[in-house]
Length: 151
Image (cartoon, rainbow, N blue to C red):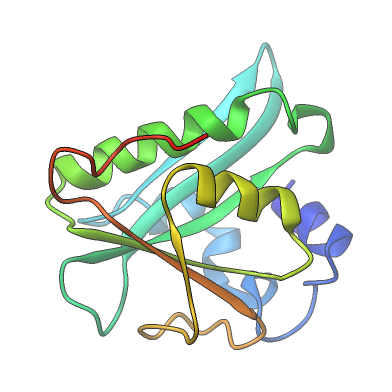
């Protein structure tokens, strides 16, 4: 499903998650300290998934990773629930910030990030290995309002 979404958005080339070796070993990758990955399912159908892991080179910051939804799951609240769960778990795990990279063409995804209080940045952070992305967002997980959804 992840590779299908990458093809759909033109990210099936170097500089994107397409070339990440963990796509072939997701359970091993996200079994590491500071990492987790949620999969949304309905019956036997995978609707989507998303994970977090430490952002290399930036202290106390996790990176939202591999958040993709099947076309049939988009606009139905699946992404909202995944994001809410990830933000809560990131905070519990001790992260103070969540960072993400995306493409300018992923408009619906950017709406989701903004609704959860992510702020767009002018430049990338850390070492993600995804030089093809052209939009970067950051959210504080600190304070009483760190996990609110903004509609």
